Structures are given as C-alpha cells and as structure tokens.
Image 1 (cartoon, rainbow, N blue to C red):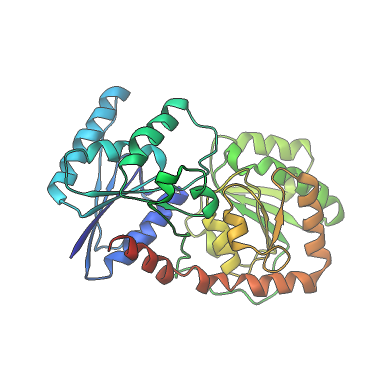
Image 2 (image 1 turned 60 degrees about the vertical axis):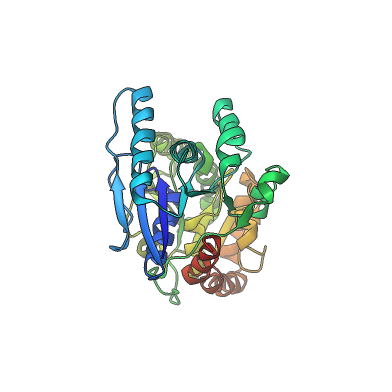
Length: 353
C-alpha cells in the first residue's frame, strides 16, 4: 500500500485547496492507497473531504517567526510519524515549509505549482523556491505546459502536466431557457480584475437593460466594486452574494459566465461553468489555463487580458447571436469527460508509481 500525505494551508475557499480535496478524496477510494492530509493554518473548512482521509489541522498562531518554526517542527514530526511514501505540497509558500520539514526523512517530495510562476512575488520567496524547495522535489506537477516552461531544464526534466478535475457532483447540464444573468466567481482581489467586468457590463447594460451581473466571492475589494457600480449608476443591476457553498447550483441557469482574470492557473469555476453548459468568455491569461480548455469561438470565447472593450463586444455578440451561443454551450459541455475526476486522478496515480 502506498502512503500519500497532502499538505496545504487549509480547506477554505482557495482553488488549490478545492483541487487537493477532490484529488485526495478520490485517491482514498482506492484500497492501494492510504491518504492523509495536513493543514498548516487554523481556518474553517468549506470543502468536504472523504472520511477515509485523515485530516490533521495545526493550531499555530502568534508571533510570526515562532509560528513559522512551530509549523516546521510539527510538520516534520507528523511526517516522521506517518512515514508517507510521498508528500504532496500544494502552492509555493507551502512548498517551503514542506521541503524544510522533509529534511532527514525518507519520503519523496512532490510540489504542485498552482498559479502563474511569472506573477509578482517577493524576491526572497522566489529565491527560496528556485534554490531550495524546487531542487529538492522528486517530481514537479504543473497545470499547463506554459507554466512548466517558466522553469529551467533541471525542473522540466522531472515535471508532469496534470490539469484540474471537474467534480462529479456538479449539477447536470442545464437545457432550459437560461436567465438573463452574467455571472462570475472568485476572490475579490486584483488578480480576478472584476473591476473590468463591472465596467464592461455597464456599457453592455445600456444596450441590454434586462441583464443583471452577479459576482460570487469575497475579499478586500468588495467595497471598491460596490462604489464602482454606484459610480456607473448600475447598482440595482449588480449584486455580490458573497461566498456561497453551492455556487454551482446558483449559477447553473445563467446566460453567460465571465472569467476576467489577469492571470490564472486553471479556473475551477470556469471549468465547471462550461461543464454545465454556460457559455463562457475568458481572458487568455497566463499560464494558459483558459487556452488549454477553450477553443476560441468553438466551445467558448477568449479575449486579451485587460481588454474591456473586447469583453463588452463579446457580451453583446453572445446575446445578439443566440444560435452561435447555443453552439458554444453544446460544445462546452464536453469538458465533463475530458477533465473528469477519474481521468485526472489516474494521471496523479502515475506520479506515485
């Protein structure tokens, strides 16, 4: 039996955390594997995990240097107790804790890179990743070829590309008349660029006054979004329901899904929106996740990053050309099989051979 230990910050609202929960839960169903999970931060859990996965959540808080050392000490101790064959670390900062904690232990470290390696980072974090964490990894897992190609040959030679899975539990493909809603899902941060979406929708709304914009999520930019909608005089047509645990059920009948990110790994929300047949408009952003999934004008629409005018034009085009949009919807559904949890987990299992 192979022993796998997953390490991440928490099981809250992050995309990497959701993917880890799905993969760990699915692998745990296979009797050939024993799966454990360690969460380094004390946060409420919003993602479910299979009961066969033992979850250990640390409660380290207080003065940061002491907290840093406690996490490493406790993680090292738990790895020594569990004796996993493989330790899988999700996210760059978690990889540093994990790689230090694995020192002196007979376990193989796998680092999964979940975002754009070229995004702005603190110099010390990037230096530690490139000179300590990544070189110690047995394998590196990337979501796209574009992400892998950001790294030197020594890293590329021990890498594997595995996309994000689609959860089997998402609602069935919606086949009735769709509501006149434009929807988006994500953290309220600069990365998601929801300000561009709000502005593009304001222009779009002048032509299509019966449409509403609904953005699900939470974060520090909420008040800025509210004020932008007020400034553009569209407040009554824009809503922010917050974090919703059953967001797929909330958006399944939406008319259009928009991913306006400046950079992204592979958007889970975009994948699931397509799987439910929601016509999608996505920025063709680094690290190529949208481009991996979407064939432009075939199963979705790709637009340049930050192009507010193009977003407005494509919103109008989708609404004004229903036969085109119906074709987009029909083709989008095919991602259900291409990125099924079964297929993606089979690829992960190959890493553990």
